Length: 102
Image 1 (cartoon, helix red, strand yellow):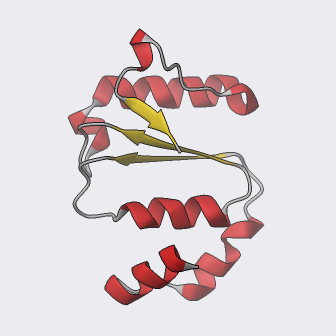
Image 2 (spheres, rainbow, N blue to C red):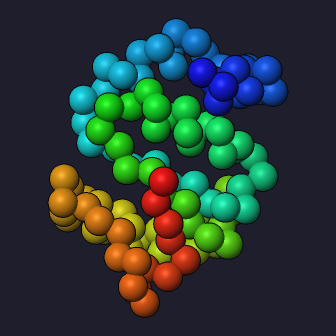
């Protein structure tokens, strides 16, 4: 898996923990900023690959401090995710501007 290899080479990671991510049964939400300089985008891809039930979202123009850079977008994503659960869907219309799913 290229993403895991890239992350391991650059930053190292806990292989035992990563191997156990598939054991998580809960629906999960991964939110990364497109301008994040601390967490490589490959990390989000790795989490998406390992977690069984996951929504993976990029928030445009947000760095590592998503909740500070784009508080309204992050709050809306979290509210919608926790309210709708399995029915969670990012609105690609005007209210969802600046958010994309992968």
